Each structure stands twice: as C-alpha cells, then as structure tokens.
Length: 208
Length: 208
DNA sequence: GTCTATATCATGATAGAC
DNA sequence: GTCTATCATGATATAGAC
Image (cartoon, rainbow over all chains, first blue to last red; front, side, top):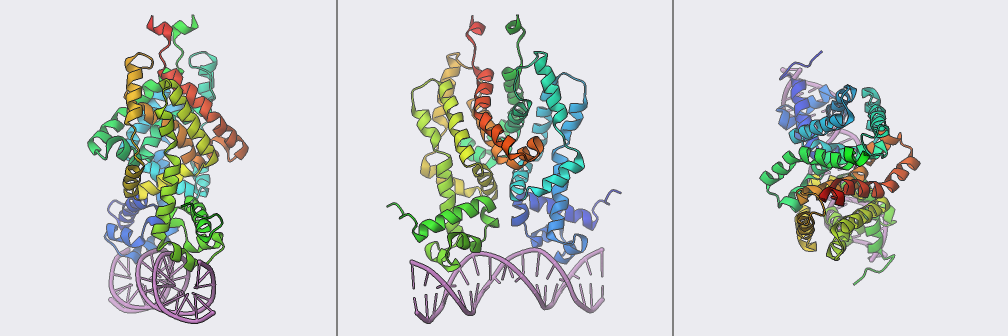
C-alpha cells in the first residue's frame, strides 16, 4: 500500500513535512504548504480534512522515524558497552542527516504532549529491556552502579541537545561559522562514546 | 528605576511571562494575557506598542535570568573541577525552580535566532574564559585532554536536556508519575557531577 | 490611564464550476 | 481531482469616550 511517488498526496506530504518541521504546527501556513507542493490550497483539504490532521500525519511519520532505530540494537546479543556505542553512532548519524528533528519534537511536545500517548503505545516504545541489560552489566561489575534511567538520560542528552539548541551552539560557540559547526557535530559521536566509557567502564586494575 | 510593584505594567509583565512561556510567541493570545493580568486588551497596546515588543521584553528578561549565573562562578579562583560542580548545581537548581525555560528558549530560538544576537552582545556572554581554564587544567594533567567546547556541551546537555524534553521523560520513563519525575530531577545534580568527574578527572594512581 | 467599540487583516475551511 | 472564489472566524491593532 505504498503511496505512488510524485502523486499529489506524495507532494503534499513532502511539502507539509518541510514546512511543519521548520515552522512548527502553529507557525506553518496552509498557503505555504500548498505553494511548496505546487498545488492549490483547497487540495490540501481535499486530501487531509484539516490542518490538524495533516500535521498529525507528519508528526507520526517523524516520531516513527526518530525513535525506532534503537530497538534493533537493543535486541542483539552484544555486550552492553558495544550496544551503547552503537546507539550513539546511530543517533548522531541520524541527527547530522536531519538536524531539525529535535527542535521540532521538543517544540510540539511541549505544546501538546497528548500526541505522544497514542504514538508510543502504537509503536510499542519500551525502554525497560535496555534498562535491564544495563542493570545486569552493573551487577556483573562491568560498569559502575548507577540508575539506568540516569545513564540513559545522560547519553541521550549529550546526543540530542546540541542539535536541539543548534542556534545557541552555532552563535555562542562558533559565531555562526557553519563549517566549524558541522565539524563539531561530526566529532560528537567519538567524543560522547569516549566520555561515556571513561565515566562508566570499570577498568580491570581497579578490580584487582 | 524599578517598576512599582502591583502597577499595571508590572501586572502585564507577569501575565505575559506566564502566557508566553507556556504557549510561546505564536501560541500566545493577547486576550489571554489581558485576562490573566485582569485588565483590558487595549491596555496591552498602550503600554507595549505591539505583541512583538511585549514578547521581546519578556524574552530578554528570561535570557538575562537564565544565562548569567555562570559568570560569577567562572570568575572565582577555585580549581576547575569545583567550578564545574558549582555550575551544575546552579543550573539544576535554577531548572527545578523554572522547568519550562529550556523548552521556551529552544522553541523561540529555533523560530527566530536573530534575537540572540543583540542579547548576547548586550550581556557580554563569552565562554572563552571558561574554555581557557579547562585547557590549563588539561595541560596540567588534572583532567583528561578533550576539546573544551565538547566538554562544555556534554555538561550543559546533561543538565538542560531532561528539562527541555520533559514531556518525553515524564511519559516514557515515568508513565506520567509526577512524584517520581520530581525525584528524578532532584537527583540530577549529584548524578551529573559524579558522571563528569568519573569521565574527566585523572586519578593519581594512573599518573604514577 | 482605562475602557468599549471597531477597523483591518490573515487564515483555515468550504462551495461549486469544470 | 483540481481549480477559483468566497465565507467565517479570530487575531492584532486603533479610535475615541470617559
């Protein structure tokens, strides 16, 4: 049931995604979406009854796109540290490709958190599995003891926040030098992996 | 030149802050601000010519409030690790008191980054001093070598992101249990301090 | 300074021809 | 399915009385 490429519906979805992501639900204008899709405003209402419904379609698509990479990694049987490294790599890669997603999600969820309910339930998002794996590694003495939730929060924060706060990072740290900013983002994965490992991995000589 | 308390202007500023922070510039309605201030819509335009100007007044106030705590700490002559701990404590304390500031700032800066220009220049925000101090501590072998910008990004990310992403944290990690969520935030300062120290402080036995 | 009433305009949504 | 034309609403902003 894939939507035919270059169909009108496809064009609308592409244009709506672009406009909603950059302007947000409240800042977006149906006229602008229509212009970018190269069609008429009335057609938007023909395909999607209202702005609200069009937005929901886009929002679901982006959430689905941003969240599920993790589940595949969690399911593998590699050691926890390798999994953490893979999650960091996967997220930074995704965010370099789509740097405006974090700002968009934060903006819209602070505006109306209710949308998260249905989607999380629908996609079966559940972090308990990864928390359990962390706890096991802690009990084995492979990594230090800390609440898995805090460890997860630390890792995810370091990955996502610099993208969500892009304008601040860009201006304050790099005086809007985009080349330098991109270089900074490209380094993030290695930096975060090393930082996390230094913080949590228990070195053997400390055990002896 | 302090504004008299309970004056009309004071009431407007208080109401506008509350509404703008929770709804954002685009989501806020002048009617709602007037209602919350207990005055008439026309009065808003009498005191502040437009919604735009009223918003700028509030935005400047919040930026001024959110940023400058750091400068006082940076200026002291304590060792770098102590300073980092103080910055973390100061920020988490501020954010627990005002948890909606990060979401507000991220939303508005992604909408229109130009406002940052004037304000940062006006308040003389400059992180170079703290970066220099970090670099000195690295060269002395007190903390590991890494780019100061990345170290700063890591620390700030772990402090701010869980508040900016409050709805996600609340729902996914705590199933909207507000008591548990507050407990989590209360633990953040200690968790982050330990995490950062474990990651960057070079233990003496490793030097020998 | 504060209010009521109104002007002005932009936007989401619909009607109806083709 | 796609378009033009139009409606209905709600928002910012202003005029003018008190």
